[in-house]
Image 1: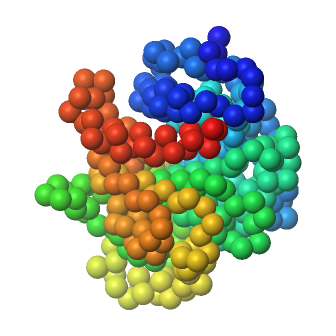
Image 2 (image 1 turned 30 degrees about the vertical axis):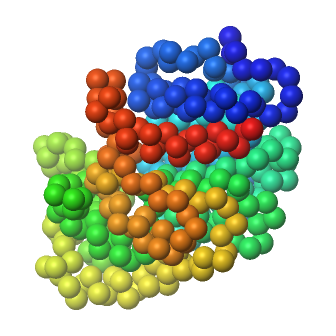
Length: 366
């Protein structure tokens, strides 16, 4: 049973750090009972549909018994979208401490497609939350974007026609320039201090499958080549990939091999062609808005050990928005926590920095 006060419309400030601790525990050890579970409210989960950019976007609603504020959590680019266990666990933890948590199921996320139309949908979801009492209208609003969706969330929240901009805008692992990001994912390692961080190939193969046409795939093999690219990005066993590649035609196999071995340094002309053809889309997916468009408290959180999107992209965002707060940490990889219970004492400084990010989120309830 929850020990949260049942009276009044705001949560008491002294609970802020305890709530942060509960959310942290749920992220770090999702299968273990939280020692602060006495704070946790019962959470009901429901599905709603929101009109967005000419379509209807499914939104999973995590509704606590007594919500004090609303948070829209836009998860990263994984096929599971709102079914990603990590996202479900995060949203549940936020709801347990008093947030009406919403996770929109954007079609482009499920299809792993980089498209500016997603920004329109994010904007329309935020706008709908500001209008609909059932989605939290009238309560303080936070928007959190994760990984690639972080920047799309930022761009949506910066639009001047948004009547109710989020009070708290958490951009966790974002980027500023999409073309630069496309190039960065082909590095072998990112550099942090004296440490080389080996680059996860997932980002590289997301980019490659989005430009599959440049490798001349036969139409009948295109979908399978995209599937194989994703498997390569997930580092599936080579024998599994080879077995699946055996279903390709000879021409399809040649196209897959060209895609799999592609590197901008080895094929600079093809790379320049890709960038030239994608210039308009890259610009639409990049942050070009000026600092005076910011109407939210902007928190930029990025791991120095991020092996998908290098932390330098959040540094660039901070330079563009000097009023933002930049928090660089060594507690995460890309999205996964690197903190174990035994390492808590040795990482107290890092724990304090990241706890501050979530404590400021909890302050919306007060």
